[in-house]
Length: 130
Image 1 (spheres, rainbow, N blue to C red):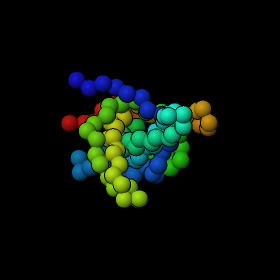
Image 2 (image 1 turned 45 degrees about the vertical axis):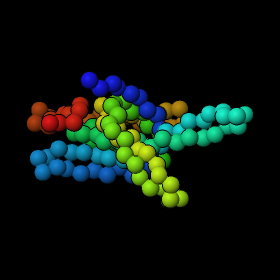
Image 3 (image 1 turned 120 degrees about the vertical axis):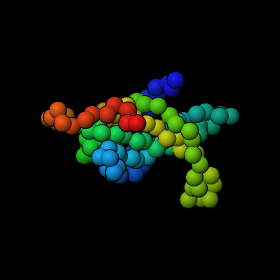
């Protein structure tokens, strides 16, 4: 059983759209979630990176709607962490995040909404298809 989480962060890479051999549409991009903490009287900034994956119609909508720098709110589940090498040579950790739902965070931006027509022939995946 997995738990659902909500993250609010800024998109760090432009969305990358792909279609699998069996026709499943996927979009992936990274999101930085920042946390300010006071430690020993000093404020420190910590950033956690999430690698978001979105499937189906929602993936297509996300690819059309978001670009690097946009602030988003996403709900979904966290997968096993992966490590990567940062530009400064240190090791970072990214948390893969499978998205159930996503939208723009409206605290510092505005976003128009445009409804998309769906036909019965278009499958809609709320989670990763198996």
